[in-house]
Length: 277
Ligand code: NAP
Image (cartoon, rainbow, N blue to C red; front, side, top):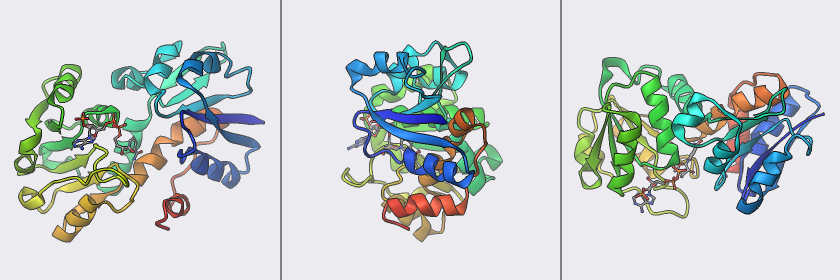
């Protein structure tokens, strides 16, 4: 039986088991997907014995994503550029391999929901400069975004991303974020603002062009206040659940040998767990 797991500290909140167990059942695969609560000080030992524990690989969640990349023997370009790993597997030579599928998940979902998001090459506004924003910049630039306006509360973190991603990214002062929306083709919230239990995202959409796409990577709640306000204005919206589902695809294929489909039924299954089914 093939086995994989999600490693976090804590790990209870992870939605990954819901997704991977759904696919295991759907495809009739003799496999298992577990939750592993691993303390930061135990991560190196745990990953060193992943194979011996019977795991073909793992997802990695907070706070282990950067450490997992450092501990891997091989890392793909996405993981290296993003500076964090969320998907691991042990290769035939017993080496620990690392990838980051968040950029893939974000852009695959964006292409599925709003294929024309980059038509005309208008600027993209990204809010946030944390781990998720880093993955999103990587994905957007790989998909041909020409100009990204990046606003973050802590400007030093945004400046660091310009250093990493180059002149296609321009930092906008957090206080000027409303004005930055004028003329953009895509707005992405990659902060944790608007998430259940966090502060609301304070953003005025008055300058947002009517045909701009608005994406929020927060998926709890699924319908964020940002998406509600954008829809009320007539803008197209893309929620965070699609990214979460698509980022899981490459890992499942790697561990279980079947490329799984992201279907409306899977979406409904996971949305139900978010209390929005
Ligand atoms: P992170 O590294 O902790 O970054 C958090 C970001 O939010 C930073 O840019 C931070 O700004 C900003 N922020 C937090 N509180 C703020 C406040 N009060 N005012 C202004 N800005 C604030 O987190 P992350 O890993 O990037 O994740 C961000 C969000 O994306 C989370 O809600 C997470 O659940 C979600 N996410 C979704 C998916 C998906 O598949 N849909 C995948 C990954 C993450 P500072 O730099 O100034 O602190």
